[in-house]
Image (cartoon, rainbow, N blue to C red; front, side, top):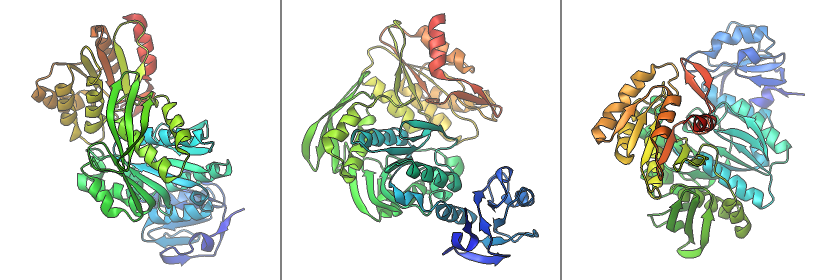
Length: 482
């Protein structure tokens, strides 16, 4: 079973076509995975050029190639100007437009994407629907989890996954749509029934270079969404409004939005708020998720439920019954030590500030924040995050995150000017386990220890090697030692 090249490239902007109209039985962008009959995409990447591996792909059985430059290889070739766009559109066709078989809900923004996708999934499931999820922590078909390598997979992998979900009976798909995926055209050829914008703050500037370019990447989602749900409290919401091509719904706490939250209460056990729609109070909502920012996430999910015409009371039951998302403002068991421990994925300035500010609303003692910054990523946010922790925490423990190929102490050295400028108290402990141990040993009754940056991750990447490091496990082990 397969499709011919002419079927796969129908409507595609092609510069030149060589060779016969062969039948393709698989698609690949990794030459190592090519099998007989596959179409191989020669993608010009950031670190390497796929054209270099074309001969190897042919040797492995590739039936044809998609290239931007014609190669001296005796196989049919499709020469295109935009290799990534071609890969996405061909992938959609190869898997028979799987997104069209489900209601597609895409979530983009710097922070909140993961939590919102889980909220929408929980609400839909409370209404008896089968839901697929694609995101940072893992992909899911109903309750079955599948490991994930990146937030939004490359187009061939994404469309294969969507086809698998549709075949399994999923009626809805909620997906985190990263700025990288939008810029790199991984979701090209897919129309979203709903697009949600959370917020936009500094992140990924190693890739996008400017905050304006970052915003424009996010905005691409709303040019392909039938309904756009926008957080109008966020300063960058106007960029999204300008891109919007469909029906518009807004949410917020401060702005005059369609969906609002008032009288917000925050406690370690969760948050509560009065939910308003169109200026009218609908009901009080009490959730088991803590963090002030989760009021925003809940509003986005409620707006999506409204747009999808879910039965409101059933949907809200799903929202209120939802437990904390792994590594997202997750309260860990601290035994009977008297202090609290919160695990959070906060790895951007805005998310770190939101997390600490949320804890400040209910803490009775001190806030001790353990954090670092990732290597081989946006260096500009390092002193900013240092200043935020120093200013908002009572004590900061600056440590290593995922240094990747950078020296941990070099990264820490770029964080410290911000901490020092804040005037806040701090210490430096490079070893992350020891840093967590120090924070827990010095925490007293009523204090909250925030472990920021790693969240759901179960590894620490040092010198390009991933080592087992699950902070939930680390905390359990350390509680026996202190």
